[in-house]
Length: 67
Image (cartoon, rainbow, N blue to C red; front, top):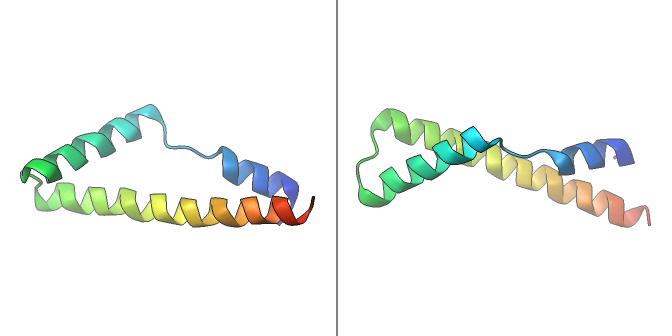
């Protein structure tokens, strides 16, 4: 992976609105009032977050191997 690609991936973050929504959905899940639609939305956030974590781990490994 190129350094530019690795740096780009490591800079990716959820914006404040998304983080707020994830926290809201998580709270609804915690208190047991999550609707099916909310659960699907939360699952999507979790999926994207996990994918991003894997890609960022690969980017960090790539940067370590180029040192």
